Picture: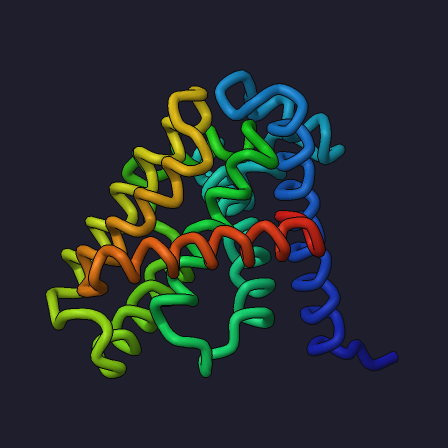
Length: 219
């Protein structure tokens, strides 16, 4: 009997992918129940129904699993926003709506948000999808004559740094919804929009983000 090595290898890869996905989904469930700081590898393997040795075949540390969770959640939200915010939409409007959508996710799921903050402050790689989206919107805004031409790395530092602090303040109950509108407007203004216009764009972005949240949720 001839053995189809390619089929066997494909089946093995599929099983590996399924096990990795099972660990990620288990981590999401455990984090939702316990919060990110109270979880251990034992919690993750128990929820996934695998051994500790199997865990290490896929993730060298608990932090690396949390990073995979982060990438999965960000990718899901990014896909939703890509579908609902066409590139024909002015870049400043897209940026405002995306920022408010991530802030809406904060109020929807505090455990997820604290985990994201923890990972943002770690030495793990930042989410490539977020950086790519910001770079694309910023370049489009420059091309449209709405944003001033600055170093994209500086723009990333500004936007992600301010967003992270705003997210923290929201989680700690130190800011109001209007505070978020003002902060996003300041970011748009720093990129080049006149503040009075940036404020209106931020308000529209907040409304649209709330509509997207109500329609599809954050996950």
